[in-house]
Image (cartoon, rainbow over all chains, first blue to last red; front, side, top):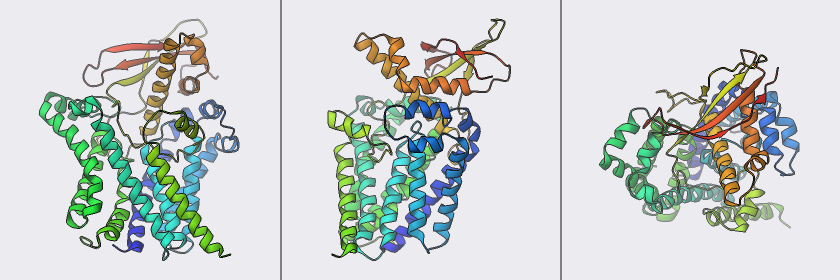
Length: 266
Length: 180
C-alpha cells in the first residue's frame, strides 16, 4: 500500500469516527447540560491543582463546548472533502479534540487516545507527504496500534479471571457494558466463555505478528480485527472503538509493506 | 541552518519519544509514572490494558430521592444514564455519561478504600475527592420537575443481568440543596 493511500484511508476512517462521536455529543446535549460537562462538574475536576485554568474558563460554558464540537465537525468534513490546506484543518481538528479531552476528563477512554494518535500521525504525514517524516507519522500510528493490541492481550493473559474464562461472561452480564441476552447465554455456556476469553487474548497478542508476516495473513488479521470491534460495539455498546482502531489499519498495511516488502491486495 | 531539516528531525524524535514513553508507561506503579501522569492533562500517554487487570463485572447504580419544603420525601428513584438498545453498536450517545458515572464511582470507592486502609476519616476523604464533588454536582443537576428543595443519593453495587434485584449499598450522601 502506498503511503498516500494509507493516509487517505486512515483519514476517512478516523473522520467517520469523529463525525459519529461529535454527533453523539451534540445529541446528548441534555446530558451535557445536566451533568458531565456542566460548570460545576468541570470546576470540581479542574480544581485538582493542575494549574491550567485557561481552558476551563472557556469550556465550562456549555455553549463553548457546543461551538468547539461544531468547529471540529466542520473541519473534519472540509479536510476529507478538500486536499487544500488539509494539514491546517487537521491541526484544528486535533486541537479541538485535545481541548475536549482536557475539558471533559471524566468518561474518556482508549478510543479517544487512539484518535489522538491517528490525528497526530496524519498531521505529521500531511505536513510533508513525500518525505521521510511523513512516513514516520504512519509508522508511529502502526506502532501504537500494535502496542495497544499486544499490551491489551498481555495484560489479560496475566489476569486469573481472564485465564479462567470468567471475564467475558462477567463483563457481558453487566448493564453498563453487557447485553441482556448475550451475557446470560455466555455465562450459561462455560466453554463458549472460555473460547471468548482465550480468543480475545490470542487475537490481541498475535495481532502484531501480522505486521511482520504481511500479505494475506495480515489482511485476515485486520478483517478479524474489524469484526472484533464490531462485536464489541454491538454487544457492549462501545461503538467509539471501531473507527479509531480501524483507522490504524491502513498505516499497518503500509508499514508491513515496508517491513516485508509485499502487499496482499493493494 | 536548514529549518526544514530541524523541524523534520524534531518531529521524528518527538514521535519516537512519545512511542517509547507509551511503551514504558503501560503498567502501573512507580513514582515516575504518577508524576508524569499528573502532568498529562491531555491524556497523551495511553494505557492500553482494556478491561484488565480487573474487568468490569459489576454495575454501579445511582439512586436518589428528593425532600420537599414540608420535609416529606419521595421514594428512591434509579438513575440510568443509558438504556440498552439494539442500535448501540452504531449510535450510543449516552455511553460517555455512563462511563463518566462509572469512573466517578470507581474513584470514590478508591478514596473510601484508602480512608479505610490508612484509618482516615471517610467524610474528610470524600470532601477532598474531586470525583465525589463531581458526582454531587451531577446528581444535583438532574431534572427536578417536582420543585423539591433537597436531594440525597446513594451508590449501590449490583450484579447486572445476573441478579438484577440484588443491590449492595456502598455510600449514602447527605441531603444536598437543589438549585431553584
